[in-house]
Amino acid sequence: MTFNKLGSVMSVLKGKKVAFARNSTSAINKQSQSTRQQVTKLGIIGDEQGDPNFHGGVEKAIHLYPSEHYKYWCAELGNKPIFQSVGAFGENISSVGLTESDICINDVILIGTTLLQVSQGRMPCWKLNIRCEEPEMALKLQETLKTGWYFRVLKEGDIGIGDDIVLQMRSYPNWSLSRIMKIIYDGSLNSVVLKEMIELPLVDSWNKLITKRIELGEVENWDHRLYG
Image 1: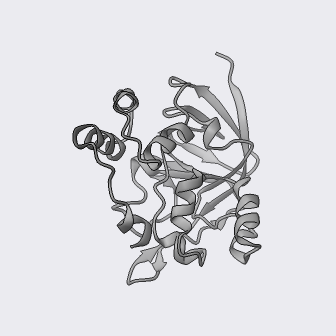
Image 2: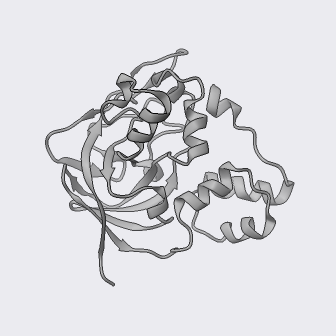
Image 3: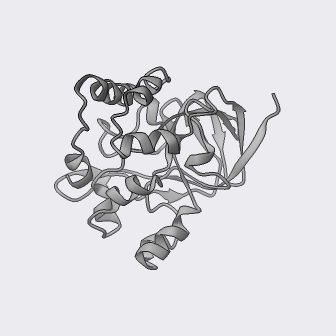
C-alpha cells in the first residue's frame, strides 16, 4: 500500500508524578522535550503516570492530543493560561494535521523510528476539571469527542519534534475513533451497531463496556470518572 502522511509532531512531552488534589498523585503536568525521546513498550523513557490503574501500561503507552483543539478550547472557555501552550491535557505527543476523525481503531502508525498502533480514545477523568479550572472539563472533552487517543507500541524506537505521522496500515477504515467514541459517549443502545462493534479489536475495558450494554440494555454511570 501507499504510506500516507497524516500529520506531524509539534511537540514531545513527558513528566514526573507529583502530589495532586484529593490526596492523589498525577504526572499530567508534562513538559516539552527539545531532544529526541526513546520509546519502549511502556511509553517514553522517563515519563510517569500518577495512577497506573487508569493511566499508562501497554495499551496506553503514548497519548496523542491534536494541537488544533487548543483553538477550540480558547474560543469556548476563554484565553486561559493553561491553553496557551501544549501539554494542558497531559499529552505525550502534540500533533498537527490530524484529529480523532482521521484515525481508525488499530491503525498502524510510524512516527520517527517507533511503530505504533491506535488502541483507544481517551476516557477523560476528573483531574482535568481541576487542572483546567473548569468543573466539567472532562465531560466537555467527552461530549465534543476532543479526547485525543492512545497508542500501544509495536516496535520500540525514538520520536522527536517535526517527525511525520505516517499511516502504515488501516484494517478498519469504517471505524474512526470519533465514530466509536460517539457511540460510546452518546450512550447508544442500538443492538445492531453494538454487535458490530463487539467484533472489533477493542481494548478489554471497551469490550466489557459494549458487552454489558448488549446484555443489560443499560448505559453505565460515569460520574465517578468525570467528577471523582
